[in-house]
Image 1 (tube, one colour):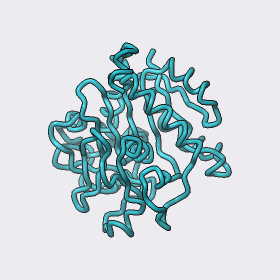
Image 2 (image 1 turned 90 degrees about the horizontal axis):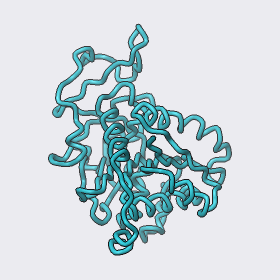
Image 3 (image 1 turned 45 degrees about the vertical axis):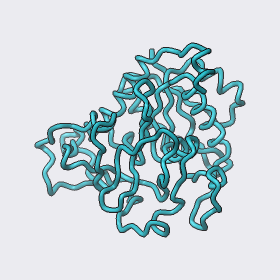
Image 4 (image 1 turned 60 degrees about the vertical axis):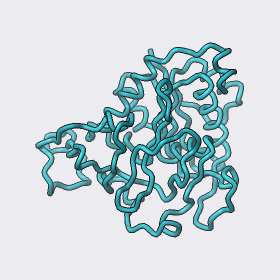
Length: 283
């Protein structure tokens, strides 16, 4: 049985009714992991570092989900932008424990939205704190969460992410059909048209990677404004992919989203613990 650690998205320090927020956000991640063959292990943000470490000892991979918080800009040595949201210290502390454990032991990591930003900063990278004011993009990176195809992405060839792009489109998805509609009239999920020349993602962020962290390579961009949409670790023996969009929301409709979760779970299934001396020497 493959166990995937996933922290709660937010804490009472950031959202007053964090329980309600987490009950809305977390089930989509859990559904995607279950469907891909893994057992999610939610990490409560109030747990002590010792308890988190004990939970992580039973896990084979790490999923860093989105969050309503922003990363504290002090972590990448920048003053706070007026448009930057407050950080969530409890979530940040748990994220750092999970990332450190994953890098020490080469556990696979899938990071999503704010989880991508947390990973990038942990690796020494920086962020745009507010895309509309700092980049001036006309691309809407934060439309309604029901929008399934917010903007196109361009995938970097010869990356882990490129290997997951569907090679053929879905004929039942017409060019003019609604991007919002999640189901056909018979109850089955509408399949998005996805192929190398036509790949769109949903989007729900106002921050993004500015400078990628150490050993992270850009694996996807928004072609209209060049905003980084995905990075991955440049390592053949450590599976790490971080995407700025929300594949958990489109798991039922998107072959690309399903491929991403299945590849992550497969990497976790193949993971074997590093020897302690290897971890210490390469840390």
